[in-house]
Picture 1 (cartoon, rainbow over the protein chains, first blue to last red):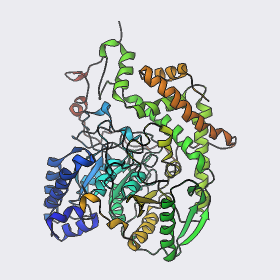
Picture 2: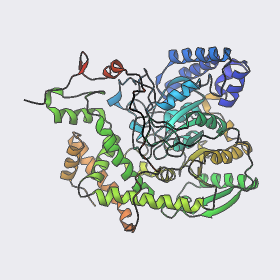
Picture 3: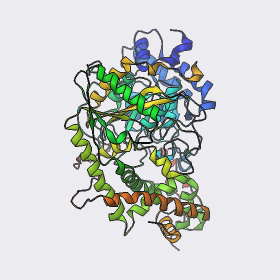
Picture 4: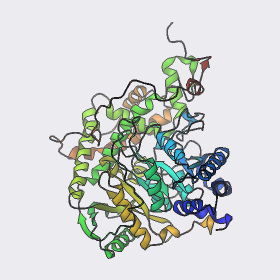
Length: 490
Length: 95
């Protein structure tokens, strides 16, 4: 392995080379930082690059290994979405209102990664408070898609996806409230999984919509994601919605056969008007699994068309409540201090929040306000029940559900910013999975004529991430999409 | 249903957001448009459906009342927009 090629390694390849002491974490981390500095002026994946922290942690990882320590993430350079707290490091949530916020403690997922020996190379750009599908809502910068710099990387974890695709680091953490890991993973041609709600701690993750938010990993391979999820999954007493269930060894089960696996294909996810290249690639992917013994059945999720309104009412209602804390008192920016308390709040929030965040706070406040609560918020929660039941019925006879991750490949920067409803519709295939709390993975299943990656979504039963990974791994082993290189690496 | 400019002003007050005239106009139109699309929820009969607030069964978790996280008052105060020694500084609210 040439030192110039280290940034191309997958997590599992790098892990094996570190274990055999063929390379050191310091060498691997230097390679990642070199790659970041060479590419990020064009890509803007990172809000903060933490060279010094990374090299210190890499040295610590090498020291740990010299003392006999081991582990799949020991010495692996990763990036963390800037909505996840990292002690002593600026954590902005992509918002001006937290532009100078230094996290006073680590999120549980950060601590788990660092305890496992992972090396933090920086904090990744995202839509402000994770509200968006293109990363254009970041207060700091627009992240570019590594496959085509004129296109969005998807969102909200666009920086996390582009960093993995552009080989800036080996794995990243994102968060997913309505598709924010899976849709950017699809747009950038990487693997990303939103775990079951309650599987991964939300402690220290800046809240958007608390009944939907979930942290998950992104990597260039299924095994990379499996390694990362194994580390961050598990019960946490600091998160009251964390679920106390054992974490299976996702990695050792990867090679299991898909012979007999029952795959449901929901007809509502192949609608008229969807990009035919996307549909063809997804159907071809299903055939690959079928050829390996999987049994494919068309199924129905009849309430799919109600998911977008239900999601955008519930998510914005929760957001309007969660974001009430930004009042300019204990942290963040403060405006108009001398104008009186009410004006101080109003102007602090007016200056600190971007347009999409304001729009969602307004929508959520309206949905919760007197006279509209029953008609909007409560109604949306009842529809959420119907959507959950749809999935329960399908999973009574199927092991996984396969769909496209998004109806199109990555759209152009600026293409949807003028019409918020159009932007919301780009989440159409991912949000139901959040409403139902299920695990969902996106992985590349082809490229369109313009050379842009197409995403395949695999959805599992609650806490059945292992089976989702098995199906994904079987497909990955049979195909070579994950080996295709971005233009900047050719 | 369309949203009036007055309703938008009222919601903005509830949300403690000062909106410019341009934002008010844009939100009146956009939120009205979005809510109109959301009207389709009204076509579903949910009279006998229980709402889902959370997908996991939550039970109150009990633990000993002891501090487990190391106190870091200086790291917390360091993020304050205004402070005076060990205190968060706020505008005067009582005349």
